[in-house]
Length: 328
Image (cartoon, rainbow, N blue to C red; front, top):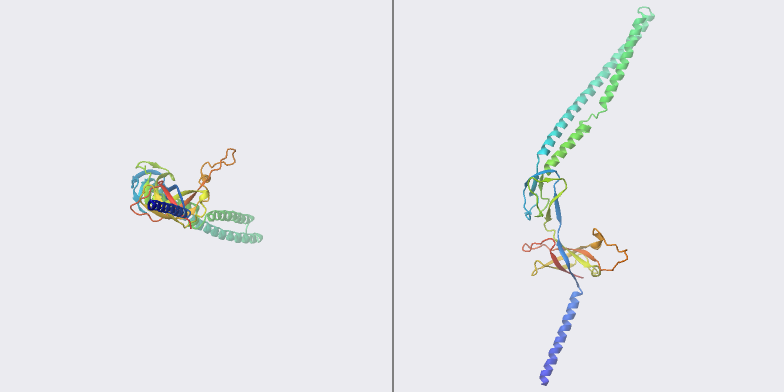
């Protein structure tokens, strides 16, 4: 009986020691790990929109399809942009023709000024001679008056020619500086850009989602049509209580259990901590100055970068997770 009692005491002692050791190990472990179940998978999402308005003529992808950078997504009817390009090219040709005509007009006006200047100088010489001959009584006073009238007429013609030349020269002589040429060139560039935007391709690798676009649909510039989840951009948004943030810093290791894969553990590192609580950036932030205020511990988003995921465990935005940050 004494041996049995002694064995019972020994077993009880071992159980107590085991419980104490387990409790100590648990406390030791948990004191270096901050965990939360308020965590969700997120990723960089590109809202795909058209930069050219018009009618959809072709859709080259399906919902949930994986695409590579440069793969075609959809096409907008390019015909209106081709017509706009042809019209802009015609306007440029007309502007260039007008520029050449203006250049020729400047040359003609300059020649007219030179010719009128010569005629005026000759007329003045003739007027001087006429006055001398009248003084010698070789010509009548009428000859002097006629010579003076010609001088005055040529003076007026010279001023008119100079004004015409100034007007012609007021237009930029360099073709590339003319307003009508610049306008036509800008219209050509815009038409070419619209024509290029009529064929939409993927800007990066990723997965198409929320696609409901069909041929025949009319689209406007900048209106989101579907989304592209960027490849290798998945991360965890873990919302820790403000009282749990002490010791959490970028670069710390994180264990991640994603609910959709209960038997597989993921790993990552703390990438950054938000500059405010989740409610601070909400559409209607709480008004804490009201009289019915109740103090509630707020949560601060912590962004966790996932290690490169394995091919057999595809991730989904919005899936829930549990994270444990190893405090250094």
